[in-house]
Structure formats: C-alpha cells, structure tokens
Length: 172
Image 1 (cartoon, rainbow, N blue to C red):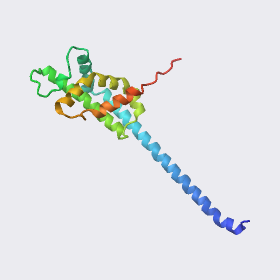
Image 2 (tube, helix red, strand yellow; image 1 turned 45 degrees about the vertical axis):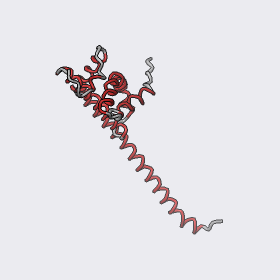
Image 3 (cartoon, rainbow, N blue to C red; image 1 turned 135 degrees about the vertical axis):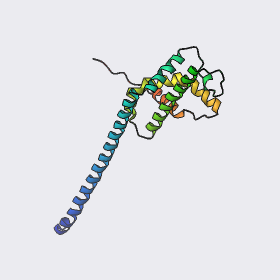
Image 4 (spheres, one colour; image 1 turned 30 degrees about the vertical axis):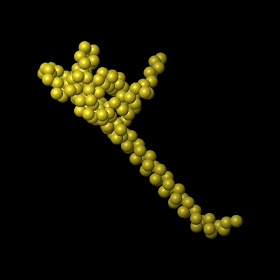
C-alpha cells in the first residue's frame, strides 16, 4: 500500500504533466487549424484573381476555338515554324499563358499553398478540359524542345483529378 505522504508528493507531478500534454495538444490543433485557414484564404484569393484575369479568359477561349477547329496545334509548338501569322503568334502566346498558369497552380497545390478540395470543386472542368485540349500542343513542345518535363505538373494535376471525378450533388 502506498503511503499517503508519497501520494501527495507525486500528485502535483501528474497534474503538471497532464496540463502540459493538454497545452501541447491545444497548440498543435491551433497550428493545424491556422494553416488550414490560411490555405483556404490563399485559394479564395486565387479564385477571385482568376475571375478577373482577362488574359486567362481570352486564353481559354482561344484554346477552345483551336480545339474545335481543323488546326493541328501540335505543329504550333515548333518555335522555328516560319509561316506564323500575327494572329497565330498571339494564339500560341495565349496557349502558353494558360498552360503556365495551370502549371504554377499545380506547383502551389503540391507545395501545400492551396486547398485542393476548394480548387477541385471550382476548377475541375476547366482544368481537365484545358489539359485535354492542350495535350497535343504540350506534346509538341516536349518533342521540339527535347524537354519531357514541360508542363508535367499541370499534367499531373489533370490526370489526378480525372482519376477521381467530382461527385454530383443530389438535388432534392
């Protein structure tokens, strides 16, 4: 049997240790919560910026038009192509702009800057379609520049999201 004097002596240590463990737990939860909130804010800021990026909107329209045309945009990836018109050059720059935008977005997502669920819910269709429409151009860039890593992060994101599509919400 434990002596009463010994129990009284060890009781403050147990209480102090318990309080310390709880304090550390609260601190960890606070940090994780703050980080999650910061990711959501960064994502919301990005989404608002995308809405007002006229160049990105124009680039998206350009890529859609080219996809539905008879043009082979894979050939447009050749920087030495001589027969480019000013309009074609502008279209090529738009394609590069949108691909670079989604490449940076993907890198930010991989680095933990953005909240993936928020991005996926708001950008799923545009990202997966952009990838599908721009894939021939991306392949052409890789071939012509001998750079197999060109736009690989955007490709990673589009493939990742394509494998696990958005769930349709039930309407009642």
